[in-house]
Length: 172
Length: 183
Image (cartoon, rainbow over all chains, first blue to last red; front, side, top):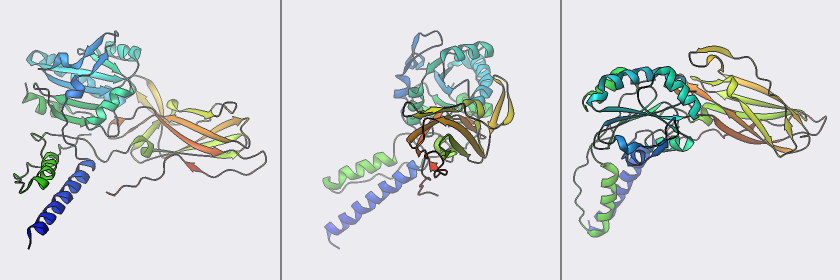
């Protein structure tokens, strides 16, 4: 066998592998992207003050995309309030990103006695979650970022309390 | 819903490029196959995009009535009070949509909410549209039983409104059936 032929076969094999990998990853299995885009985000809080997400870098950051019109989102939030109260001192920080209107977010935050900030984003903020694996842009969507600023976990749909503890516990 | 974390593979064996010409290629493949420490990711690949979960279609029943339909996939539902309809061009006017009663769902925050499953048919009175081509836009908002909700989604389609006395128009789909190589 001549060298060119071997090289040709090798190139074809590598190209096929790349193609297969492309299909594999586009079929729903997601690779954890860097959280840089998310940490660089600045959104208004419920009082209209701009807040940058990187102000919490160095903490174990749980970013929860939610909305008041999303019942499963609201259902899981009391657990987040408990976890924030229990582990905030150890460096756990929840931050909500509400795809919603500020007045609705303010009222719900007050009613729930939310003990972590909830920023208010529009559709653009939801678009950002797409890059983190939220392909259909549904809510809730939660991203856990480690102390080094890397995405450690991302979940579409409610995060069960046991699941949250098992992931975050190791990081605190 | 609680998805099991999906492992995204394992680091590949080192590739040794035997010439500069394929070196760049192996580099690309290595980058594709290995992008740092493996991390847990639980993103449900089965979840439908909203325009597939809530398939919108419509037809003109006559010169004064449009009929909008939502075919809701199993395991998904739409909120009755979140529907909004609009028609263009200017001059063509839609009346109040006739929404059938839904199923009452009690919601702690919003009180009682009515939801639809299966197929919903909404009648839309129309004026000054006879013989025209109109664009019907429908906003809808719904959720999936697995525990996720979609933001309000706008879908559009173009309809030919018949002349007075003419029969109903053909049913028009907003989104063509999904082509998926993996199904």
